[in-house]
Length: 546
Ligand code: ADP
Image (tube, helix red, strand yellow):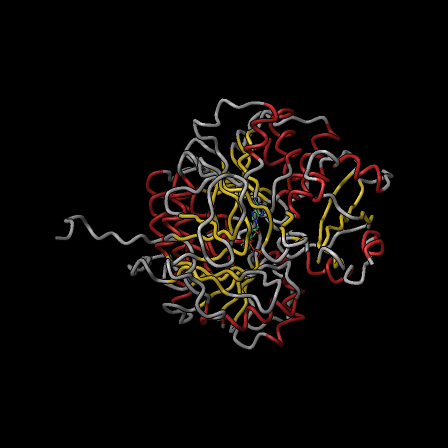
């Protein structure tokens, strides 16, 4: 027997319908690409999204067509998302921080038909246009007054483009499994792979993200996604905010400490999210200006490991709770968040920070396991580490065009490529990416643990650890350090700082100081480039062993 409840497909545009009905006047405040602060409401945003749908429909965009966006977080970008998916087309967020050739590759692979771009990227696109044969027209997200002269094919200013239709249109009724959005993984090896979200997966993901033990978003919140909409689906926040009727603050193109601080303070943001690099800039700004964060309640930090010192500063100096989170593009992207269960809630000081260094526990809808290389389950003891695998309704089951073939194990779990421990209360901690883990004498050393420890040294700005060939042990850790401006330090000072805080055999065999550590387009340390640079590096311990 089936249940007798209504079949109400989980469609993303129902989220903006809900926001415009229940929270019509709530504001979306953006720093526009043109400069000034812009304010709109959910009711207006929905009305303009309908115009986007209507205009796309007039251009012959149909179910399943891909429409690319190359844009910062603004109200216009949100309107475009809802307008695109409202007619069953697919928003394809392109990351402008990728190499130009990679951008061209991705747009061609997705066969995008229209490209919506911010003013910032017009010159980049002009230089790439010859390589983008599938793009029929370019819409520049600005008004006629700011529209530049451009060689882009069929270029039009967004405000003119949507003004050419009357908005008398309805979002389509679709199967909830219809594709809604697309985002490519940054592809540190091989070509990037397309992840295709469905309406259903996006809606369920935002429901998960909303729960109290995840981001806990309500209509009383002022939510600022600093994480860009082109990075891993914006951690779902362009959907989670409207789903809960939260006021939204969209930071546009400026993510430096002073600009972010201004928005946090002027618009009384209560909940925000971004990668650690952004928060490093904010904390430096706060320290140099002596500013405080009286309104901010919690900050979600993920994308790479949140340094313990960062959590401590936010909480102890500014009274802001840190929610360490982990996820990936393939997971829509949230996988776990480190809020405190009753077993840990009474901890304070260093004990609390120990737990908050973990990436946390999954919300309902994400299942986790850790296995050895043979696929056998490993114990949840907080010590044993293995391959982290996940399953759930917002986890990818395949890549676009079946790139990479079958990606699930026989139980339907996806291998995240991360290595992790899980403790008895279900808290997961990433110890490495499987390709970055250092294999020393058959045992694994976590590069992330060593990096976290090294950045705790007051003179260190950034640290990376890579495995370097060793004649006896196979690989041994090499610590690569960028010192803070004006600081000097030697190898022994750093090693002495780490000594006693980790197992002796985890201690780096050598330390090198560099001016800069290379980063990927999503702000992660580019270990492949570092390994390349130091591939012939001879460790002092290697010479001794030979
Ligand atoms: P990209 O490689 O394009 O940046 P993602 O943003 O999807 O792709 O990256 C996902 C990966 O980022 C995860 O598999 C994990 O290795 C890393 N990651 C994300 N959050 C964290 C975190 N809190 N701590 C450590 N690693 C993290």
